[in-house]
Length: 207
Image (cartoon, rainbow, N blue to C red):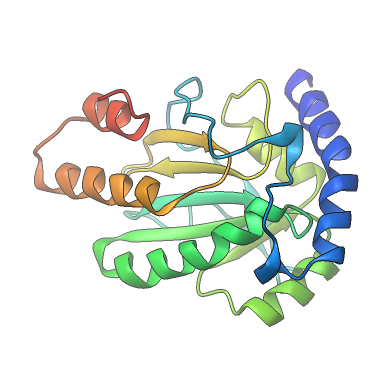
């Protein structure tokens, strides 16, 4: 309950600023980050929540329940976002490009919208996602809390390897260099050139 309360507090405080920013400015024209607790790309990926990918299920755009474990043997990029979160919106084209480029490498991006269904459906129709979307409000917050973090702000991204090991979590906006680093780490893991501990250290930027 502690994690859920912290998450709810962060999101309720951010929703007002983020919703105003999203409604006032088209996504392609958003220039300044607006997100929970003023999270920015300056925040380093943390390693406080590393472990194995927990199981949880959320609704799809069509209303069906889908488990986060429905993509076995694939490295996951799990991106928590919302329609009112400006840096979240800026990440989406980058994640779409990464999905296209690395799909044959066994990588799967999964979006989790911490939002209401209707605005997400409207946004998705315009955006043309090429990766699956799961949706929820309190249940999506609980999904984020299941990674063991004490505080959560949007955007929030989790990286795993194909064996469901969490390689790292990143609070703040994702940039090309973050994904380039992840792609290199995953390639070295596939080749057997590094072990899990080194992969986690590299994703966290420690080496």
